[in-house]
Length: 177
Image 1: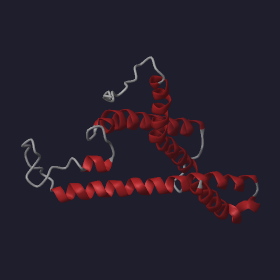
Image 2: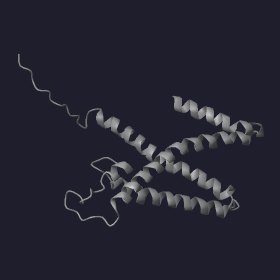
Image 3: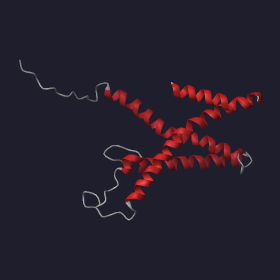
Image 4: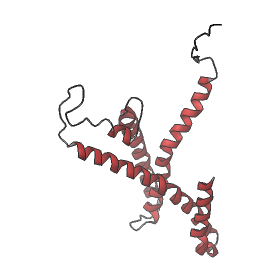
């Protein structure tokens, strides 16, 4: 009895594959760009309540909002879409994937010229960028939960001594899940 070879099955656009691709794509974009959106909340708070705060007049609020909107548009459209999304290593992205593109000691295999910046400097920059990414991934959830729990102080000042313990309990519970 002869066995037939295993033929890989390809999904066409009419199957359920394309219906699942859109939600996954939107979810991935939300995860990537979600951190950009939360930074605005902290910037807005610092503009009106920080150490160099401006009074929250009509003109100041419109000015700060326009600066935030324009900076978000520029950062997302130019930095992320035009530059970062084009930088890849055979479809892989991220700082370590780009660090893997640093040519070897004799230049790249295609005969490209040596770099003006030394190879160890580029690798150190890649490791430093990765450390920044991990640091951001650790501090963002903590700051977000802490900011939300600090809202309890607005309701009543009785919660002030419990803000940090409640935040720690929520974070431990979140990461245990």
